[in-house]
Length: 161
Image (spheres, rainbow, N blue to C red):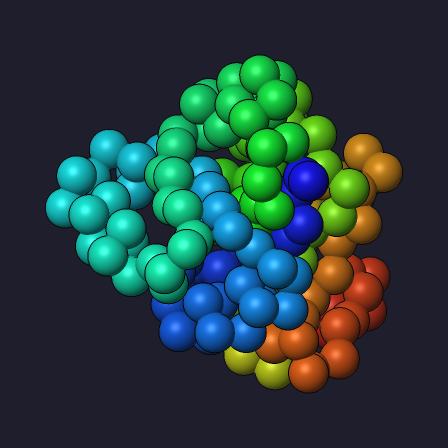
């Protein structure tokens, strides 16, 4: 047992994650790593209530997430690591979180952002942070749902130019 899926999705725990990826990857624990969310007791309660039956929810800061991995906490279940932003996963990886691959699933729109894959948008900072993560030997790809084809980071970043 281990990290089955690491996903960046600004919506965090929502219908698509719950109904599709949890089943697809046989997830029994979702660990959300986000500094702001982990300190918001109301949102922690909301996300715990949103969990499907039989799926444990943990919401940790980046620092707590790195420590949990070092303690072997992610080796005890089929874990989905869920990040709200590229900034948070970048901080975690640079801080020592060890990952094999990262799926970019949903990044909201806004000024300076460009749709590069289905509903996934990137800006230059996110692209650069993801390229730095990839330079550490971590596969980074974009995919919204299990039945939607994935796309390499290189192909997505090329669309920014």
